[in-house]
Image (tube, rainbow, N blue to C red):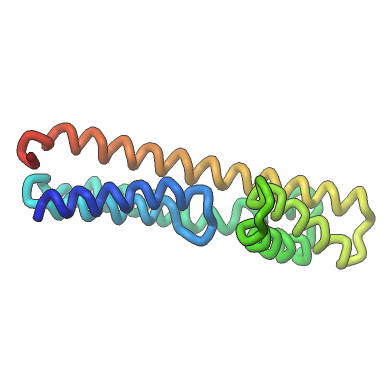
Length: 165
């Protein structure tokens, strides 16, 4: 059973890593579920303090993931239409079969949203750039947390691998 839990935990860790780039998956929360599953193995001692602290971090990053791109758009002069356009562009960028759609989708979504809102082109481009920067910053933070959680998993795995196998 422990081997199954370790494999399932590794799957969630990988899914969390992927989720740091895909907005449909909450990357850090998914990675945290992997850490929780790993600690459920009989061989690995349950460390509630570690799990609670990492959960708080994962939830905070999950909340910030929704705030940072909107802050970037607003900071660079964007309106609510630009923020909505960012979200729509992100979804379209995920679905569209174009290279780097997930990166350019939010930019063009914010740009179109601002232009529909009757903003001047230079103001719309500036807001779209802010959206792009917010998206990149949010993705980087999620990626960093997923890497740290993966590091915790790998260190713990090697600490207890002799007991697992």
